[in-house]
Image (cartoon, rainbow, N blue to C red; front, side, top):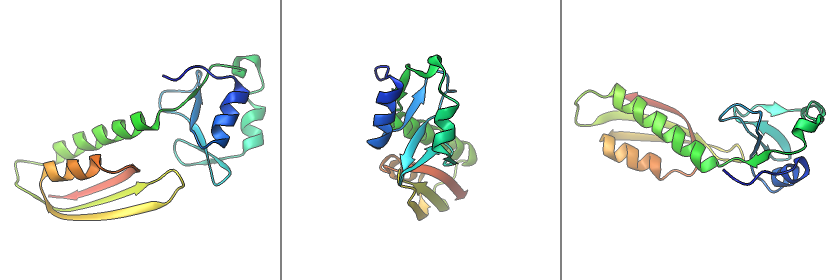
Length: 139
C-alpha cells in the first residue's frame, strides 16, 4: 500500500490522473478523474462538490491512499480466469470468445477470438493493459 496522504495531497493525485481511496472505503472502492469528471470504481460519475462536501469531517483530513490499479486488473484477471476454467470442460479449444475492455479514459475496446485454447486465452488476457469488463465464451 502507498504511504498515507492528506486530503489535499489526495486531491492533487486525482489531478495527476491517479485513482485514490480513503481508509474508510470498502476494499476495491476508489475514485479517479477522467476527462475532468470524478468517476468511481464502477464507472459512475460523481458530483465532485458533493463528494467532497460529505467528506469535510476531520476523519477525512488524512489516511487517503493512491489506489494500485495493477492489483485491481490482476484481481479481475484472476476472477476471469476462474470463471473461464469453471466454464470449460475438457475440450481442446474454445470456439468463440468475446472480450470487452475499458482503459482509464473510458475508451472501450472489443476483441473476438476464435478457436483458442485456454492457455492462448489467458496469455491474451494477461497482455491487456486495460480493465477487462466482460468475457463471453462459447465452448
